[in-house]
Figure 1 (cartoon, one colour):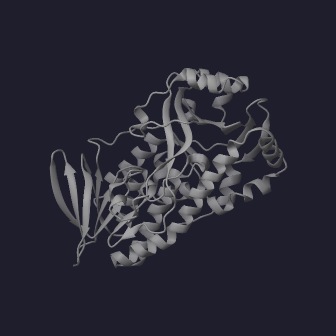
Figure 2 (spheres, rainbow, N blue to C red):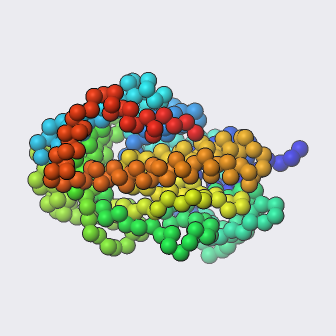
Length: 398
C-alpha cells in the first residue's frame, strides 16, 4: 500500500490548524509545527462571517463552540457625535438564510482551542510545539525542511510544506518574492481590549455588533462568551513609527485613547472608560502578489495575504485558504498540481479582499463633508441594498 502523502504545516494559528484538518480529511498525514512551547490561548474577539463559519461547520468546529460563540442579531452603525443610528443590517437567521451560514463572534482562544481539540482527535495530525521552520529545499521527490528546536536544527522530509507562519513568514522570504516585499504600516493603530461584562454598560451587552464611525477613527464592540466579556476595538489614524514586534505585549496608554475619543457620544466614552487595560496593535499589511507557491511549498493566511481588519476577514480568508487547500489535495494526487490548483483558486479572491479592506478603512475614517455624504448614502440603503453589497464576500464557497 502506498503511504499517505505527508504535509508539514508551519504555524498552529487558526489558518494552520484549519489547514491541518482539511488536509487530513483529504488523506494526508500532517505534522503541524508551532514555534511557541505551548499553544497560547491569547488574543481577543473575532468576527466569523458566513464564508468562514460555513467551512468551520463542515468540520464540526461550530458544534465545539456551542455556549461560547454568539450569533449577533444585527450590525448597528452609529454616529460618533450624536450616537444616532446611521444604518442597521440584520444578521442572525436573516443572514444565515441569505448566505447559508451564520455570522458569529467568538474569542480567538475559544476558536483555537476547538481547532486544537479537533486536530488532536485525529491520528493523521501530529502537533509539535517549540519548533519553527528555518528554511526548506525542494527536492526531486519532496521537500526537505530545516526545523529549529531550541539550539538544535533538525531536518524533516515531507511531500509538501505549507507556510502558515504569519506576517513575517520565513517561508514567504524563501519564495523569492522580491526585496521590496515587506510589510508596510497602514498609518493606523488598533487599540484592543476585553471588558468584564459586569463592568460594561448595558448597551454593550446587546446581541449585536456595533460600529461607530468618526473622523479618522472608528470603534467596534460586541459581547463574547454569553456576555461575560465585551470585545472592544478602537482604530485611529496614527503616525506611529515604532517596532511592530510582539503586538500583544505592547500595553496601550489609556489616557491617549481617552483624549482621542473625548468628543464622542457619551455611550462610546462610557464603554471606553470601562476598559482596564489596552493593547496597542499597529496595523500592517502587504501588497497582493500573484504567486504563493514554489515547487512543493505554498503559503496560507497572513503569510500569503496579510490584510487590514476593516472587513473583519483576516481569519476568514485563512479559513477559506485551508478549505481550498484540502479540496485541491482531494482532487489531485500530484502535489505540485494540487498546489497549483490551490493557488489559482485563491490568489485573485484574496487580493480582492485585501484591496477592499484598504478601501473600507478609508471610507470608515472620512472627515468632514465627505463623512456626511457617506452617512447620507448609507442611510439611503434599504436592507436588500445593504445586504447585496456583501454577497460577493459572504456567498463564497471554497
